[in-house]
Image (tube, rainbow, N blue to C red):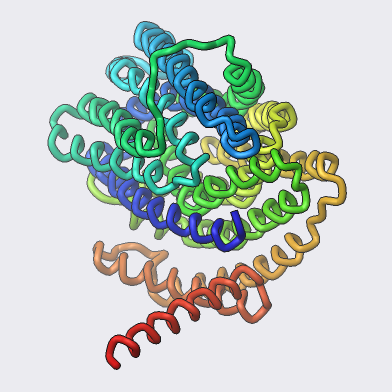
Length: 526
């Protein structure tokens, strides 16, 4: 794909992701409204942790390994029928694994909860077990859904898979609205139904692309074996990379009530710029990286990696600075109502301060990881993930006692930057002549613009008194929104004046779009 095509596709995915995140935040606000940062909320978040971990480890690993193999068969080798046979086999194998994992998780729920949250007891423990058992069958739907997403992405079809999370969030909101009397049990049932819809919505698009599913387990197919071999190190790396979550939950279960919920809500805010923008960029970039690597076009690969790093930096540097500065009014606006009170806001904003430090590193790691995966080098990212997990867990134990749950957030941020440094060193060894000069030049300008933005944000926030609290919802939306708009405009204007290329490209594109629209209107009137 050309730079223009990548940018256009990324914009479409970004818009759909923004809608999904907005709906998702409305969902989280309803959860906070009804349950607050309480033992009930802790139980729910622990209950969905293991199913999400398994999907994040196994499902993401297989779908990530699957995409470059399928892309190569479609593009370079042009073996379409063989490619579709492989898809059927991978679907069948993943479905079988999903059934086994779901059954095992439901049966082992009591032990899993004890492993993850040994500090739980009584009603909190019981609710966590029930939630785990209800949500675990969704592992099957999510794993197969990720393979469907990778298949469609190989065809440069990004919109339909991006609709899945939107539908899932609407289902979850419906569960909150209509079965709120069932508490977290009803919420867990809604979560399970939402997981199923993520798969269901992609089936018509797969059929349209030519897929004819057959129940087959052709595990002797060399391409299926290749997917498995590529997925294995990703599974190992993901298992290590996600292990800190289990350690965090375990340590936080011994802290003040609501610590797990505070970390979870803060992480959701941290994930906002990553989910809205970075995920859109990497989703569109990954098939192109795999295509460049398959064709051994290393100059195109380098250009795509550099563009990806610059784009995520353009978004995540100001996002990290902005969330750190405006953390309290942002958390208050998003969650403080109903059962979510001032204490929960203080807990969550404290975690967000330290989580925000990692946003830039996590974004860079996403681009660098898919770069190695696109080259079908799964070993290097695995080693880096293992190293990052070890450092994260070591820092967890070092910081949790003096800093509480904030120490767990800081440990994750420091480990994320350690991984970024390791990725950059490894990439320079992997791609001869890979240069970061353009990325660093752009980053310097972005940092300067972000610092200026922070100063304006503090001034505007003080002027509107958003740090003091006491406002109603409408006033909060107005004044926090005005502060963000003024500081964001400052960032964009200064970045443009400093010559940040990506901002200039956006301005030129918007100008062309406006001129084209005006020209069309003139022709219509004449």
